Image (cartoon, rainbow, N blue to C red; front, side, top):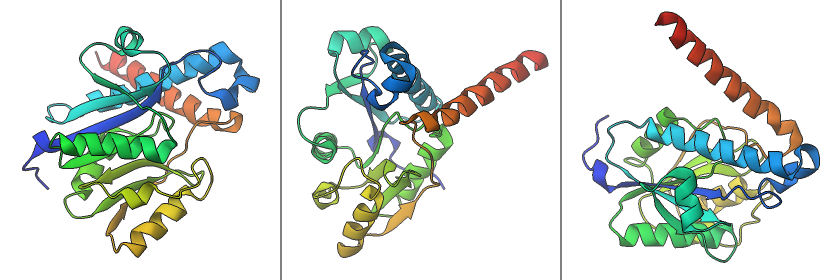
Length: 221
């Protein structure tokens, strides 16, 4: 399937500046504040590495952040990214605000992701954008009952209202609203978030596969 309007694709990445004591708080009792913040840093960088692998796609990328400030974000991730603070409100209000701003700037297909799910790949992001050619809504189900990705062609504010954010019914509630609105929905493969100590094995497996890939390339050379 080919693309006709790649310039109108927009990717929004939600993340947090890796400040010890504020990042990955559910993992602090297990890892400590500094190591938990380092994990936040590594997972954000991993996600943006996947984004960079989209190659010559002419989509625009935006990072919405909490904590830190613009200068700290630029020092961390570079100056060639559009940074915007997430602002106040629950997650739904912050996503709506980001989507509204992007649609107002002329974006026609918008994917929003977080950085807690290291299984997100460039291939999966391409698939999500492709699905938006045929479906009103694209969702990436998280194994914990939430979603790691949401894609839209227009702002549908109802999808973010009266959702029990952070619970195991977020995806279920979102799908119920989509059904009420008669939206066509595409579901991506389910992936695991890394939020709790028992989830760390997911991150370790991703790192292990990456290290094996690097060793393989070295042997070929």
